Image 1 (tube, rainbow, N blue to C red):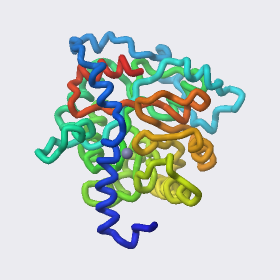
Image 2 (image 1 turned 180 degrees about the vertical axis):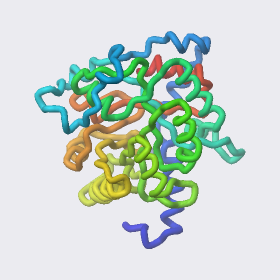
Image 3 (image 1 turned 45 degrees about the horizontal axis):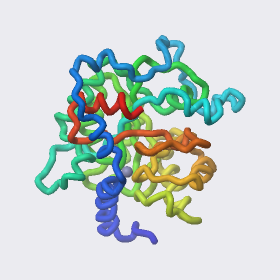
Length: 307
Ligand SMILES: [Zn+2]
């Protein structure tokens, strides 16, 4: 079914897709909130033991892409699973709550000051943002990472990721990963193609998040073209770079999806807080949703406990 002929309907669907979408997922955020209720002193963040791969100097860090890593240098699945996980945070909307926002939706809507406080905590605690190529090299080959690595990811193309997250990340020298749902590009409250290009030009990574957020587990035949091939091509045209990372809508995946993603040029894919696939951990890299309810210290607790 093609919605492109019906812009109003498509816009409505995109709006629906962006939020309930994520709220349907048995959430990461919900489970993690419980785990994170114990309070820690904010300054203990500075000494916490988030796994790192070593104290590499910037010069020795691997800056290659997955394509530059020879097959015989890639670790097997068990080795990859055994490496300490890097904390990866997933954000959606970054805006102040409205009275119409449901309790559940607020896990996916982080108030602006809360977001800024979370980023400040990461910076003050000595975290370094890393990008997917670095994570891939670390997982696949054991390449070193900066100390206290964290990955900041943003799903669903929301405009406030450009207007709020971008300058906030910039302030702390962080880079982000933006998983774009292409149906939304240019619509009100979503990013434009030019903004996506700017994010890419500024050193952030643009990843694929399907055309209109349909559940990957339900794809058949042509759906792979509509949801993966075409949107990925669109993003490559916008950025002028290869797009090789994917985030599953709702974090939902199945083993059948992995070869389909590989066939279409993906090198790794991101889920939410569920268990990784034992055969293909690079296609089930875990993230947690950084809830709108989380103070900086709760976020830090969650990072330490979830990865
Ligand atoms: Zn999404």
